[in-house]
Length: 401
Ligand code: AN7
Image (cartoon, rainbow, N blue to C red):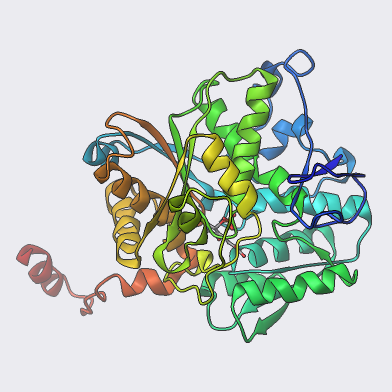
């Protein structure tokens, strides 16, 4: 069953619907499972991928479209953790098949598309959604149309969308405008929309929450911190953790903490005013192009997650993002794209502000791989030194250091 998160209107699972017909709000798929029906040991000896939690995925198991997404690395980061005075873990979502967390949502969303029997799928994207959709559409054998904000998509993501055979349209406008356009097209039934306004996308992404508490030995961390753009992921992770809590698998809940770029921070602005109202940012701007989003469609779900979990929202500037990206790469060997590093930058700021307590167990979700945005990575480094293939020349340089 699909339910409106605002007025609780109910819709059939097989209705193609993105917003509530009664009130216009966002929808979610209702999943209600108890440990007496599915004991948590069920998941222990299955292959470590998203579908090991298949009981919680409300789609037709015989139609699964998968690239073995999920089961991503969960790395304890002692060096950065000690610097910050916290117990820090990083969930490395860049290790998914196309290099971002979107693959989780796309696997379940594409499975739903197969169930519905659609022939064309589409999305607007700051990059990663389009890369993922293109790959999963190829695997499913469906036509794929993606709308990208012109000139604002990192190179790796653009390469993926094109190479997997999506019809790539470069929109003169930002992500929010592209999403509005493609949503209108979807409402006229020209394509099945696989942005996170589609509640089945979030069903896949909630598995990040499942994996985190499972890996901690059926315990919730004190806090989960992640970058927020269109606000689907924070909503999804909270939904997943709440489902595991309701099932009786875990006793505690984490403080959901969303980090936005200073130039694209409508959710953090709402949090500062302690309101559920979200005022869109008209011209969002940040070097973290993945989260260059001014009007997040899941703002209601995200703000509820933050308030209900006693969580927090904060902003970081581009310099803080780039510094955190470098820290993670140099201290821990984990390469992430700028948007992902917002989580680390955010934790640092929240420790300094006294919001995050010393010794807290914090899990940062780093959402996309370093190679997604090679230009930003290269620009952060000095160029390699050119030498002849000559031992003496090489020694001169190395022994000089
Ligand atoms: C690396 O690809 O919106 O708050 O169109 O690529 O769930 O939107 C990407 C978002 C964080 C924000 N980190 O997640 C898209 C798109 C990375 C991302 C986010 C995105 P949401």
